[in-house]
Length: 277
Image (cartoon, rainbow, N blue to C red; front, side):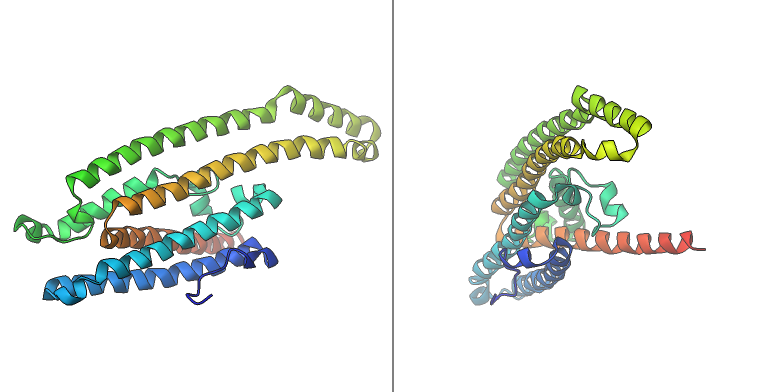
């Protein structure tokens, strides 16, 4: 790949964990490029370099599309691996306990994107309040127009509604773990273990596997819906924002994701050390 981006075709030959670690490394590279682009744009605005400013939106747009495509590749590969092992995708061993604690159906909650946007917008607004009070345009997330705010508000309401619908469906699916079929099967197998030992239980293993397989297939559907909403939220958000605003949004998203992953991994390691003391 000429841009260094992972091909969605390659990870079939490796574990998803290996792919994920490489994907994180690429996300870090994209973060570096996004920061440089935002700094370049800020420098141009301060120097009023109009010749370069005309090219900036185009170049930033290309960079934003590349980063969004990187997210798309992640979800494409994740979807294919979910067909093989959906349980690993829902409880991934390659993430930290800290990340897992805040997960929603195998990933970040889509509505979190709006909290991220407003938090970053508020920080940039506070940092550049003087310029804004003088009527100067900052071009970043502190400079969202009324039209953009209305569009974000509409998107947020639709996203929350879809998120609630998926959450409700997931709750109903989770309830089926205690349905009549599962309760009866668990009782039959328990009685066989008590009376005949594990040999008789082995004869029912196919029934156990087929029953659980149907549950896992339903989980795969729910994970796919959740991931679709996550990706759709990112795409629609970046479409609402200007290229430089989308750049700042993607910077904030990458920083939060990468630092939470790092902090969580360090906490897990320190916790393991404490267990051995």
